Length: 117
Length: 112
Image 1 (cartoon, helix red, strand yellow):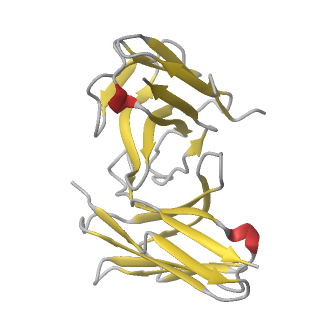
Image 2 (cartoon, chains in turn yellow, brown; image 1 turned 180 degrees about the vertical axis):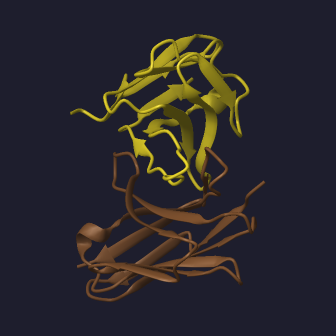
């Protein structure tokens, strides 16, 4: 049981280049999330998904796109990278919220450190 | 929307001392308050949580307290050890929301 995995662990891009970050979870979780972490800013939500084929914007969605084609995978895309997107990116997942269990723990991946030059 | 303030941003203690991290929230509908610990180079991991129907919860050396009237909650770590050194995040969430709101984090340093 690997939990939440992220690929790649590190990446350096030049301004204007594109890339996709992959998140995979093997816990059969319905909900998945992408966060970015910057010094002094905590965890800021980029996009999230409450099920296969559905996505929604978070607090800081500009410059990013996402897709959830399979339940276990959540992809984060940068179409034209900018230096402001230099950050550590975390993926997380959690169980579906039910009437008997409204409070679901988020499980985080190990992060991807992205530098945009 | 919800706003969570966390203090202090950095906390330095000697091994064996106690550490307290405080958070305030703005949305009175919030009723779930998790705390996450992030070790260097890793993702955050849940260490303890509290729901609005209780005022305090303990798990060995860590405890959380909640004051719903004042809209603040705190993490208490007793007998700190060097392995407690990490970044700690508080969060708040209502049962009707998919998404918790995180504080900005506290970097705890425990000196041997």
